[in-house]
Structures are given as structure tokens and as C-alpha cells.
Amino acid sequence: MLPAPFQLARPTELAEAIRLAAATEDSHFHAGGTELLMAMKLRLLRPELLVDLKRIAGLDRIAWAEDASVVIGALATHRQVEQDVIVRRHLPALAALCANVANVRVRSAGTLGGNLCFAEPHADPPTLLAALGARLRLVGPDGEREVAADAFILGEFETAREPAEIMTHITVPVPRGPVAYRRFRHGERPAVNAAVAWTMAADGVTIERARIVVGALGSRPQDVGLLERLLAGRRAGEAAEAVAQGLTDAVGEIEAMDDRHGGADYKRHLAGVLITRNIAEAAAQINGATP
Image (cartoon, rainbow, N blue to C red; front, side, top):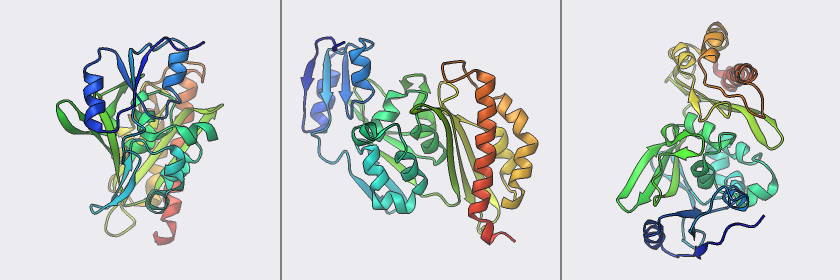
């Protein structure tokens, strides 16, 4: 099926793109189009105007920032992120994730910002970016604002982005400790995924702060707060035991929904397995420094 008729605009300036979108009641921004065009072909979306962002310079740039973070343009493709020297050096877990998104066609065309803005629940990047404390820059008719990655996706295909706002870049702080990401997938999409990121204390063996985020099993990525609190202040060598003690209660609190990827209880079980393996990997990453 072909998309319903629509107008296409190809601005070269950010301000022009925002103006065009704000002036049209039903408009959508086009980045990689891997999700959007499929929805249009199925007539699930029928935009009056499609605003193509690919001619706006700089939206795919990846750079190092002086505050020890990596700034990734929202139009950077998964393939770009995977291969970028800065990302591979400072955010290897993100590079590895992007190397395994969907298939090579999607990785070559799909963008990191587009993935976040579409908010498909069964996606890889939102979970890891939430665990890493990423910040998303949005620019719209009312100016610029920043939204934390873990607050951006509100639900299934729903985000904090206003209709005429454009995500320009994602800022990812370089982690001060181990990071681990795992997923279980059917086909090209994760049925469940989980990310762990530890901030280590000055002694290198005490967990100052833990982030544990699960995704794909519910409508949005979720913090596993019970386990995060159990790990704070513990030595890395104690992490596996602490998580084992609280895992059943923690997994039981996770929002999960039945869908073609499995039942809610099945996906909660998978989340527990992935969390346990991520904790073991995080501890192994600093095992050489652990007395």
C-alpha cells in the first residue's frame, strides 16, 4: 500500500523546518524514515506535510564535549554511531548496541534521534541511554529545552516532544564505572532489554550510584529502583548477592504487557535473567581492581 498524498518540504535551516511544522496542523519530521514511512504506507499516519530534515547541516555531527560527554547529533545513523571513533572509545556499550540494531538497512538509514522520537516500545537505544543519564536537546517555536532521556518517552509511541519541536542532539555523559546491556529478542526487535550503569566511588570498588533500567516489556523504559537502592554503597563484589536477594520483589514491580513477544510474566522473568547477567558483567569489568 502506498502512503496517502502529502506535501514534502526540504528545508536547509533549522528555523525554517520549525516554522513549516508549526504552520501546518498535521506535520511530521522525516529523519531516517525507517519507522515513519512504514506507518505511512500502512495508513496508520496520514500527515499533511512531511518535513525532511536531512539537508540541515550539523544534525548528524558527533563530537566530544569539555564536560566529559559525547554529543551525538539526532540525525546520526546507527551505523555512524557504531563506527564513530569517539563513541567507540568513550561509550563502547552504545557503539555495540548500535551495531546490532535491527538489520544493516535500518542501521544505515535509521537515526538515533528518530528512534527515540518514534517511541516504539520494542527498541534498543532508549533503555541504555536512560541508564547512561543522557540528555536530549529539543528546539521549537518557544526556544530550546533539555529533557532527560529517562523522562522523554511517556508511553507507547508517546514522548515529551511538542509537535513542532526538533530533537537536535543527544548528550551522553561518559560513565564513571562499568556499563552492561543485554536483550532477548524475537526477530529484529527486543522482547525485553536491560541496561546497568554504575558510578564508582573514588576507591574504585564501591558503587556510589547504580542505574538499572529495563525496556521493551512495558510501554516505556523503567528504572528498577529497588535494586538501585540495594546496590548503592556496596562493594562490587557484593553486588550479585544483593541483587539476588531483592530480584523477585523488584521484578514483580515492573510494568509488563502481553503482546506477540510474550506474556507479562514471561517477560518479567527474562528481565530478571538479563539484570542478573548484567550485574555479573559489571562486576567482572572491575574485578581486577577488587580486593
